[in-house]
Length: 164
Image (tube, rainbow, N blue to C red):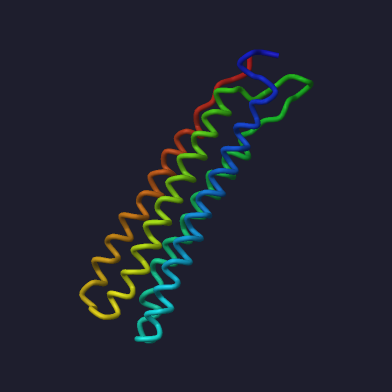
């Protein structure tokens, strides 16, 4: 057994997969719930605009998919011991943990932003139609935060050090 490949290294990889999924889904759930409340409230005033105002809910849901992608990639990258010899290095475990944190926390931040903007935006655009395009642009920039985390997570999952 090498100091670079302790038997505890897979723990960090599995934690990376878990935090990617957990935090991204927390953001997706918050964004969906918060903007869904706004859509429901707006639907009472103008029911014909409900389908047009569902965009924040969809954008929040996509954040959970980002976390799922990273979690699956990390989960498939964690290697168990073969013949009593570790196959997964600390470096790889830490890289996978960093990937999960980058994606998960970015997804959570994006979900919070989408929820707040979605709630206020759909209510405001129901009263003033000219605000709709501005709301969509703000939502796109909020979604980009989650996408940045996904991109960094994908890059970090490709970092690997052998156990030889």
